[in-house]
Length: 308
Image (cartoon, rainbow, N blue to C red; front, side, top):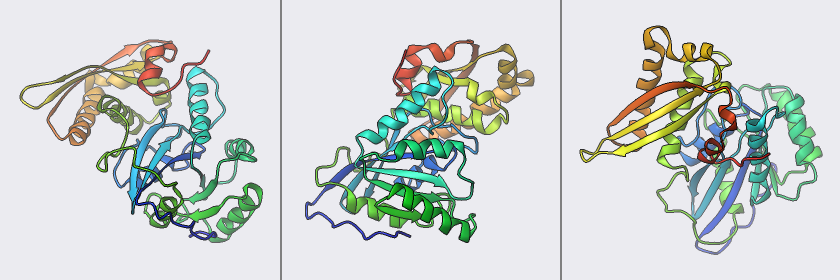
């Protein structure tokens, strides 16, 4: 639901705008982007800080094209990669026509959320407050949260949704469509993301690391697509490297007799094949590099800026 009237709709036959999706780790940003697009374009995991790159989802609503920047979650940065992720999140908001602030309505407003609220207060970008996970939040707490954040941030609209069930997402999408400025679409109507197939393939494998390894390991790992070959028979051969920091972590990824790596590879291969729409031959190997997050080329591959 929204507590603000729908913006006046432009008479221009097409509208197009940039929407930055901000929020604390695990607020449901990637799930929301996927729901707005109608297809999976961002990796989703129960673990926080899964988004690293500003992967762009592209949604169509009526005559409007919504270019959705799924930003990394904002948190307290401790290393170079962390700093790059947080910088990318704020940069995503600077040029946006609308900023969606996604709050986990079922959780308390902790230090991470306070950091974001402090950073957003007074910013000039039009703000839409999205209270996610409203389906599992207590109603009284939800209303109090909506009121307190509205007074503090003065958003142009407030939506209470559940990105996982889809409740309220259609209303939010319609509102965003009507709020976009007049102008031609920037992408073909059937394009869902600006991510390359190489980037998506690496993200799919990294998602399996998150889902299958229930430890802190995924935060100390990365996936690089080293080789990509489209064969004449229509299949694709992909070689990927999983980077970890220590030998003990490599042992976890590989598993006994290579069983864990085989399982990760099989699930990732099926998902990549489904994304590409063709047969895929996926080869994974694990490399130990204590300073993998100091590799400039990796930052470029995942769409982040290298900072000294």
